[in-house]
Length: 107
Image (cartoon, rainbow, N blue to C red; front, side):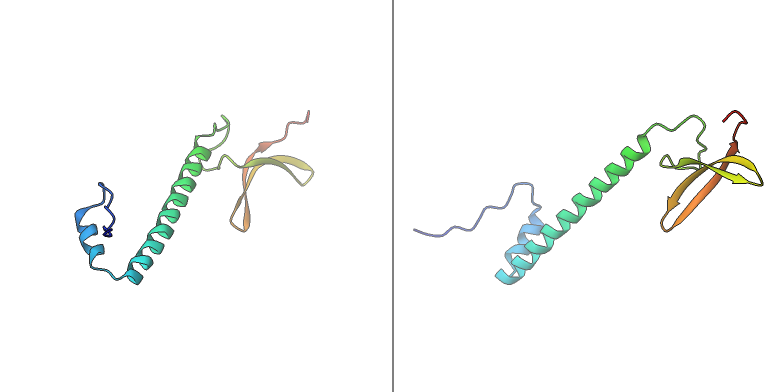
């Protein structure tokens, strides 16, 4: 029984097949390992980009300014016995706030 080399996938470019045909078994295994790692990396990047897009699709409250991310929450700060609403969110290691308006006296 004779051993036949594997048939490359039909969608694999000819120049890639020709290049791989010249490689040693060790180099082929290195290429295979790298290709697997690269494929996982690109799939992970695609998933992250998709998740980021989904986050952007979330509905924005009507009163949320364009420069405030949807993940922002409203907090109340008291300054000189007056209460004010602020949008607040985290950017890396720092918390960012943006003035929203005064708290009505009824609240």
